[in-house]
Length: 242
Ligand SMILES: [Zn+2]
Image 1: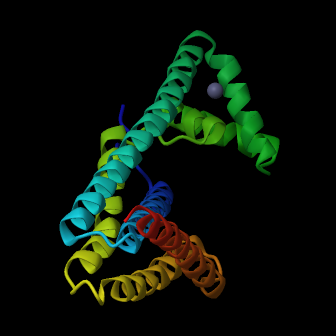
Image 2: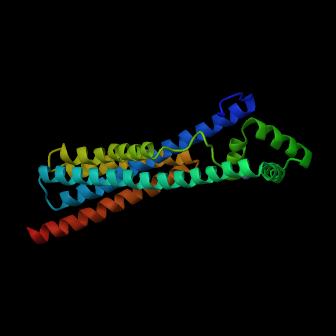
Image 3: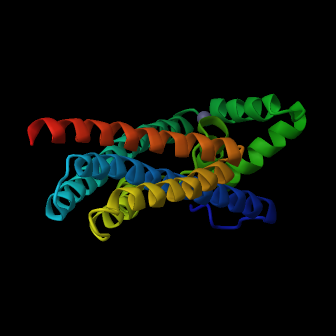
């Protein structure tokens, strides 16, 4: 039986809220991934520029940083989402087994969970009986495990999304340092990066329901410090080696 069969209006409403929350989470993850790409690549190219690198050297360093960062983000995301999905699938399999072997105990358990949510015992029992008849696994997954069995995250999807988000962010400092004439490239990059960090800081705070001003300030400060430190190190190394 699938969850889409015979859904009432209330279940549809819940599914909508869940989907919206899910989409906002994805969007926020994408903004944060792009932010990582901006900050880490900006720190890298500004540091290399501080050592008086040529445009080719900057392009090489920036591209290597972009690929290293986006691939490591994608791999990390793949591992983390796979692990979570394995755990969720194991929990669902165990729930399925329990529903098969001890349906009475499972019904009592579900009733208890609805009582704990605030329904009186009689109503909790009715709800448990009806939802068990409708889709027992979905009811247990949602109430007991907090999982939507129809909406498990695909690890490849998550990995690809992190890769793309980081790459988009990383392209900004990379282009800003490579395209302008050498005498102007550092300040142009710094200005472009700080402007981008205002946008990503604001967007991630709004999507997460936090105060945008403080998030923007922290984000811009963090990125500014990262570029200041790597530029100083690059300048010192550049001066001492040649
Ligand atoms: Zn159960």
